[in-house]
Image (tube, rainbow, N blue to C red; front, side, top):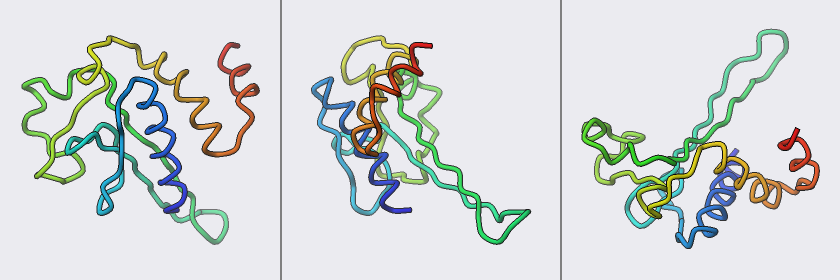
Length: 128
């Protein structure tokens, strides 16, 4: 599980590098950070399998793309229960207004590289 989480972080860090942003990790926390602000949260959930022994897992991440995380309505949110650090977004760091879909397309090659997938197959499925 930890290896999977670190790979998700690495794919996001690769995407951020495209924009000249130095993303990184904080050893005590999961997610992607830019300095002392969090730009991506990552989570894992385990559910007991109903039809066989073992567990079913769900994995996901939330990459803050739009500037909304810095707006007043988000002041009371404590991301991932970490009160001492704030949050940021790709838009806040770059000044670019990119769509979530565009960021998703740009993330795919990084995901493929980190997880060892053929990016040409992923590109074909994205264009259809």
